[in-house]
Image (cartoon, rainbow, N blue to C red; front, side, top):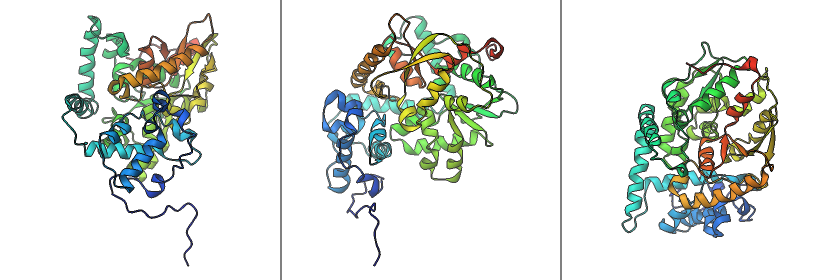
Length: 419
């Protein structure tokens, strides 16, 4: 007689709507330990706005024949995909992958409902962003110049969180070293809106003695935002393009937490040996600096920074310790008391769900202000561009760890601007 293991999932009559395994679908035991870590549940108190509520809805659709209606759609779309629930889950439920499947299904088969003009406009805007702008860096840069002009005539409110764009930064490209030993991934929005962060990252990396290269053609979008939106085929296409853009076996350093989390998951996303091999090369910026053989010499600043952990750095990459270790070489680091709760940025989430994103951010801002030493300038360290912009829109001063480290480099390690 064939024995079954204790962990083997029972057989179900499935609808075939969600592309997930039986094991993943039934792994949640509804213990509720995830609830305090879910930002949308904390704001609403609704079960359907919690991880276990969303999983129950997925099971109902896949196993019980429940309809894919507006209630199901809204529950899936309201998720920030912070994956804080994964870190708290004793059963190891892969909630992020379940949510990707649900979002993919909704993207491929939109819910039929009464006419929703606002949703129609949103779908057009999403198509333009995901198909026309993000994968085409020249279009993104041209759009950024228009945004720069709009900032100069005060047409971009501060509450939007767009960083102050500088003409000199936009006009000055990053310059790679010959025969690079390590690469820096520059990405799409971050290269257009926060290129100076890349400049600082390269300066710190060079201070270790490393020769720093840049990716080739196709290295300008990792597909993370597409993946969050359920556009999995687009994400896979962009992932293959990124892999081709970084030949060899040198480390690929990423200074955007969301991009790094997505790129470290290319093996699962693509299901190929080259995806696995590339994912093993990806390192968060702070991880790489922490492990460098020749640590850059820092000058203690005597300043304090409040560390905000981007969700995909903390819950997916588990690299929050490296951020503190490298910053501690020049700064006093202070943690918030909210156990790394999400700030509400969530990639494009703040643009799509501004009210919920704002309510989540209010809680994070309160935790940050409570942690800040009295009588000192409040500076927040955040390793993700979306988080930085979202928090800056609330009036906080936010700096990337690369910026803070570059400012603290000893004089012998400093260099001029690239280009």
